Image (cartoon, rainbow, N blue to C red; front, side, top):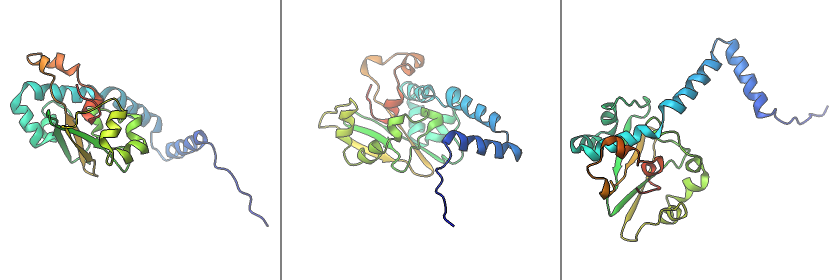
Length: 195
């Protein structure tokens, strides 16, 4: 008797089978998918982090609290983080220091604050190279830092998430929080761009 090798079912068929099995066991799959989609598209957005950055640029006391305990500080702006994101470490860029974040294991970010990770952040090449060749990788991504600027790369852990606090462009001093927030990009909060 010979065993026949069967190819796995297409992904779409496997997903449908899993959804059906969960529905049969009382798990509301369609409702959960809709809820997750709403969170991803309407709640977990880079504008949250932009608000945090703008507040830090305009309120030195808030900035100090943010650098000391990021999770508690963002809660002041009614921004929540998942329970397993026990720590939010905010990394301040300076004229001579540039911070970059990565998750070498997968693609973890402080997604409820800076938004879901972009595709390039999840890519193995970025995850593997940015820790060893940070200056080269940043240059390839369009950020050519001067040689006197040190680069520190921070790797996400199981319970710690990072966010970069960009340097405020000098010409924006005195702008309102709303105006400043419009300048801040997800890329600047990951550390692959400067403003």
